[in-house]
Image (cartoon, helix red, strand yellow):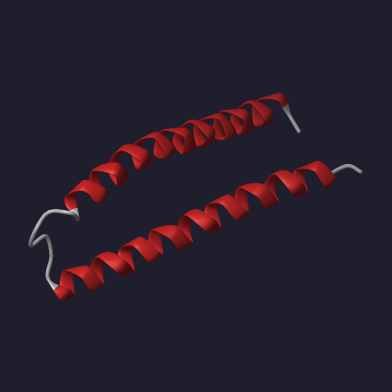
Length: 82
């Protein structure tokens, strides 16, 4: 790998790391707020509840996928050159 390619790859890895850390911080705050919102009387209709459940399930699946991809990327990278 050439130096400029390694530098570009390092920048991408660092940017991804920062984006994941930022997402974690924002998610904690936002989801705490969401827990307060859903406790309000009359917060939602059955249709909105269904939509909310679908969105939460989808986000959960995407988070699991991203975590699995990250784990597998590191695992595969460790095997390169062995």
